[in-house]
Amino acid sequence: MARDAAGRSYELVLRGEIGDHYALLFDGMCLERVTGHTVLTGRMVDQAHLHGVIARIQELGVELVSVNVVDNAKEHAMATVTASDGTRLFYKDWGEGPPVILSHGWPLNADSWEAQMLFLASSGYRCIAHDRRGHGRSDQPWDGNEMDTYADDLAVLIDTLDLRGVTLVGFSTGGGEVVRYIGRHGTGRIAGLVLVSAVPPLMLRTDDNPGGVPIEVFDGIRASSLADRSQTYRELADGPFFGNNREGADVSQGTRDAFWRQGMQSGHRNAYECIAAFSASDFRPDLAQVDVPTLVIHGDDDQVVPFAVGGQASAALVEGATLTVYPGAPHGITDTHKERLGADLLAFLDTLHERTADDRARLHA
Image (cartoon, rainbow, N blue to C red; front, side):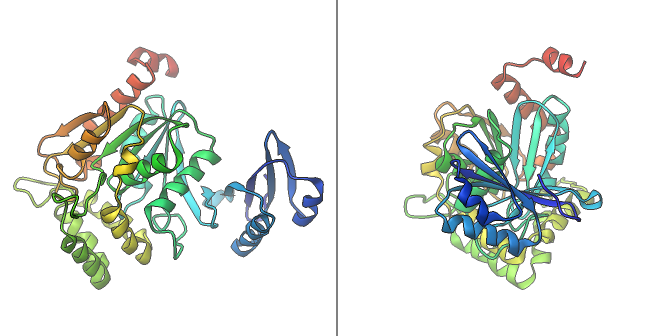
């Protein structure tokens, strides 16, 4: 992959093996044909330049499969893939072994999965977590802040890294993202699914979902976000997200501050529009497409995504799904119950891949 002085480069994968006459349209780029595809690599001048190249490809009617942009500068090395609209998506990639993708909640980013990533990567799994568009270190585009685009962005990550036999793990909003991925892209590359405190099947109360959450709740979050989103995130962290408003709860200041910090890294419009994405998206048709082993984990004192609305309802819609309930647990179990969650994820993965503790020990020998 070619690089510029700052270390940034891009790689575009096109469907089909394009003819030599097309190469003249991409002066300064390297062209390589592989079976069924053409790979173009070039120096990343700036974002406008990349957008121009993508536009030229689209004008030719050639299908663009994926775009990968990597910043190789030593001081600011970040792994990214690039969505079809040019949005750069940051991701972490830890460990070796069967791949696991962990999709984060609102308004967080990949950092929220670090406890599970460290544990699972140390146990023989390759753990990948990306910052959703508009969140964390990813770009903050004006458009695309809805579930279909989130799912297509996830497909770009999976296709660009050429991952197969993937276990998708989605927390809260991320649960919607991974389920919508299956609904739009199928399970050809997927081995298993885990939903953690997840928003599917449908959070919003509607005529055919009378047990859902009233729209006034989400309108209140929207209004609060517009008035003072920094304080909104602070109050969520100090209160219902981790169950710190329950008698006897003692969630550390550091944990609550980390939630606020990640929230403030998101783009204002991106986070605002994501409220509709996680609350009003109907994932029931997507859940009907799930045909891989599925684990659903939910706390029965979740004040953000109520147990009956989320985990209990999703498990009932996926044939053969296993429902694991954490008694008295809040929404943010990735932090409050990280040891148990890590153990449950590992047990599911080991069963899926027919691994034992002895197998993992041999891998590290």
